[in-house]
Picture 1 (cartoon, rainbow, N blue to C red):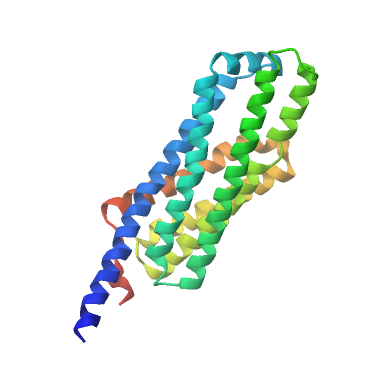
Picture 2 (cartoon, rainbow, N blue to C red):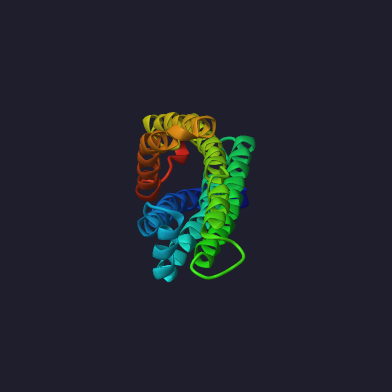
Length: 237
């Protein structure tokens, strides 16, 4: 009897701790992803492949830091997914595991994207030296790698995992229903945007820019709530 009394509060404390950890990881993932994109895009800029290669070669170390930030963002996604999984598992273990697998797959695809990004970097650096390939040929190879759809596929896996996690939050009422409902809506909007980007790549840039706003708001607000308020475990009793 006494063992049961001791075990239950301990499990709840662990659940709350993982929820706060997930709140922190929301911001870690966002920060590293955003910093990586900002560094990479600011250095690469616009222009021909040769012009881009020259800018990247001139700021190679900083560019590599940007790529590493993206990689850390993918690695941190696994920690975020684990935190969310432990936090919502008591509400629906099967759905929580499904969401965890989607987010883990997202991280794995992101890791593959990092490999391709470093490969493209080597193509840019090779363009500045005499080699068997011309700058035009290297540019074509770089475009094939960059337009392979890895980012869109990773985002789609993210959307499925995010939708399921927010659905469990809505079902369990661990966080306010308005917050979890907005998270579901934002995840589905983001999902639609990335499918459109695969079907109509010429319209991808404006669609993803606008479509990222709702999910950004959802993740920031949820991260703040989990980090500051935590989850209301009593709502399940």
